[in-house]
Amino acid sequence: MIFAQDILARLRAVIDPASSILIIGHRSPDGDAVGSTLALQHYFHSLGKRAEVLMPDGFPPFLNWLPGSEGIHLFDGDTESGIERIRTADLIFCLDFNRMDRVGPMSKHLIEASCPKVVIDHHLDPSAFDLMFSETTSSSTCELVYRLVEALGDIESQTKEFFTCIYTGLLTDTGSFKYNVYPTTFRIAGHIVSKGIVPQDIQSSLFDVNSLNRLQLLGTLLSERLLHFPEHRASLMTMTAEILQKYDYQPGDTEGFVNYGLSLQDCTFTALASEKDGVVKISFRSKGDVDVNVLANEAFGGGGHKNAAGARTEKSLAEVEAIITDIIKTRL
Image (cartoon, rainbow, N blue to C red):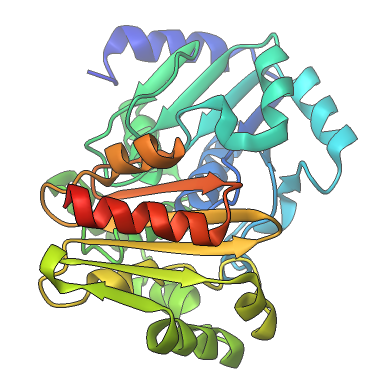
């Protein structure tokens, strides 16, 4: 049990003396990474602790409204300050990633840091950390942060800002409660609503903020870049760097696009591959027993969850398309 009393006692033993806590999320942070890191920061502030959030790089603009987001530090924006924050931290929390390489160039300095490192994460196959709160049957890292604060006996004293950040991670990592949800997920969501959080306000802040360019990008993706393999119950979408440039791509613009491929009737597997700055980012989604965590890891060294995974590669977009097409035709 990840919240056993002996583990919680070990956690309190490293939190109590800490005067400088650093909270780190993964590269290309999503709603769960930003929501969970900020929620944990709000929790530590409620304890009178000094805590900062450091991300490897920037997060999508549609998360800018989250309380505390203006104070997030970016490693790639000021590397020297980022290294110093890691070096001088008394305690480091690693949220929403299971391996050090998920933080990019920052990983070297994170590994070298001498202070205790605590991981809170829900991805498969986590690496070893000093103290781990890892559970794959959890909707999100935000859910785990909530449950940890609850297990510590402090949930009722948390602020509206804390609950707003938690709800954001629940919402985004479950596709608006469509997948990867458990009874505990709804229990937590219900309690958050009872604290005065208005679900439709958060939903609107996250999803009703489309630019014309983003909608046109989606239109091009669906009309020109969608391949359907009905005999394999699969689909594949690809996005070239030229198309992204044409529609003035901004970080987060393709968030959620992969789910359109999975919405095809009888489709149980889809992938979206996007090319930018010499790197192809791939998102996988599936239904039922199609394990995209395994497929992403075998093909590209990626991973995530059984029905939602991702990867990055320096292979060309054409190579990636060929590899995924082969997976569809031979593995599904």
